[in-house]
Amino acid sequence: MDLTQKFLQFALVGADWVLWLLVGLSVISVYVMLERFMFFRQIVGADAGIRRGLLDALADSDIAKARKLVTGVPGSGARMVAEMLGNHARGPAAVEAALNSVRSEEKLRLERYLSYLGTLGSNAPFIGLFGTVLGIIRAFKDLADSGLKPGGESSAAVMAGISEALVATAVGLLVAIPAVVAYNVFQRRVKRTLGEAEALAQSALGLMVASKPAEAKE
Image (cartoon, rainbow, N blue to C red; front, side, top):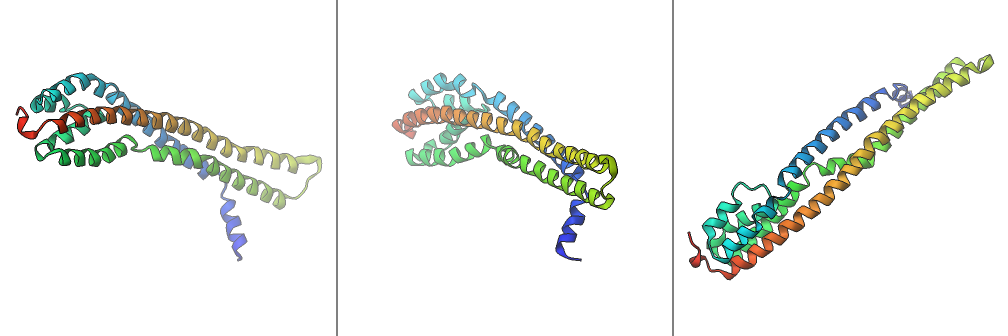
């Protein structure tokens, strides 16, 4: 048996498994959307809520109060400042190094699972198209096996098979479009959150570097 025949046998399995694959991928994408929605809903406004009090405490070199303000706050800016405060006693260089290290960690935390949405949005239409191609191959193979019949019955059967095969492409688009929209929305949310966090962290950094560790009110 040559390679073409082997691939033909695979194609004749049909597109049903492709549809189930798309359904499974869509379920995962819905989970990711809900998880990211709840995550960003939890941290929205968290940094803004402590910004004024935190900067006032750092301006007064009240490190203990500053640590209390950022403890348990889910905002990225608060987490950055908490890491910086943990290294305050080691001097300005340690504080800056802590900020640089935690910045990357926060970006990864905010972008968690988003690569899945981006990948699904880009590739789901191709998966659906693959299912359509398999369905069309099966439809024409059925036509070849049955032969031409009077009255156009064979043509009608082929058209019916092709219409069923096109469902895979439609499902692929149906899965991809929400994933792409969600990916873009969450990416904008990530950029905004990181911008707000960076502004808070840089403001805190300036105040922490200006104050010596020995002056901290522990």
